[in-house]
Amino acid sequence: MIKTRKLNCGTVMVLEHIPYVQSASIGIWARAGAVNETKKNAGVSHLIEHMMFKGTETRSAKQIAEDADKIGSQMNAFTTKEATCYYIKTLTTNIRESVDILMDMFLNSTYDNNELAKEKLVIIEEMKMIEDSPEDDIHDIICGQVFKGMPLAQPVIGTKGSVSGITRSIIKNYIENEYTKDSIVVSVAGRYDEEELVGMFEGMFDRLKGGKTVPAHGETPHSPTYRVKVKDIEQTHICMGIRGVKIEDERFYALMVLNNILGGSMSSRLFQSIREEKGLAYSVYSASSSFVDDGIFSIYAAVSHEKAADAISAIREELLKLKKEGVAADELSAAKEQLKGGYIFGQENVSGRMFANGKNMALLGRVYLPEEVIAGIDKVTNSGLEDASGFINDFSKYSATIITNRKADLKKWML
Image (cartoon, rainbow, N blue to C red; front, side):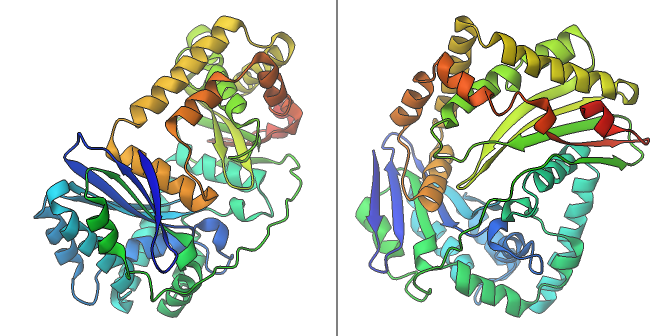
């Protein structure tokens, strides 16, 4: 059962009690991510996430880790385009100690200048790691192309220049304005005593500012762009993208099902055609990512250098086939079952439930119940698939990037 409780300060808690487990996952969600940043402070949300593990007024970085380890808890954090989550998974018997550690980090981190200087270097090394992973790098690039001129274009990690220029005062100012009472959500899933748990958080967020102003971001029309990045690698990595749908778009579930059919599984069309039949790629897939105000649909493949043009042509073929022939009834049914299975499997652990509930409450102000999600998938029809495919099967509207070891006329291949 999922419940919401509002603390006296107005901060929302979303609670899912699971009586048959012996653990709980506790997450503090802040609606602050790359979309809340400027070019000057790009990457500050991610840097703050790192710095919260670097010491508080009463705990050193080492003590934070040791205090979590000695009670058997697992602690981590992550930053996305739209939110940051700090979480700890713990035994039910150690919830109070775990909340104390998590809230100490969240409210009392010192953002020491010496630690800040070191952590900037760590993040710059992380940037190099992404550069050394073409699959990660190319998805950041295509996102920048598809959302050019919009906040969603900004990479979560920022740039070397922006991160290097972030000071302690910039961090403190960003936290003050973005980590407000109404932009924080506490999400808990597992076994706990509700009143005792709520009591642990009561008064904790009182010192934070009140209302947060969320600026309206106008949509910039997407015009296809093409980029070739040359570097010494063994394969050519291809990624193409187009605008998708936002989370609450009526076509959300239809595009989810369509993505599964096109490139979301081993039985998908792209996998069977480009890998199994044509032998052009080891890795090939499509992905649909939805945000509060927009979305992106992308197709990725990694192929031998001399096969890049053939792979792009084969992807075009599959999109054209989708447009001409649509989807068979058995294919639609199988895709629905795959998606429902994946969703239900993800719901069978406390952290999965905490993440889903927290994200939805932080970004949308509501929780999607499991039966709603299953019903949404079940309701998808061929007519709905046609509506969803209408804006992803026009190959000429895709932006594209390749990372390869040679010069290439990507625009010619795409057109």
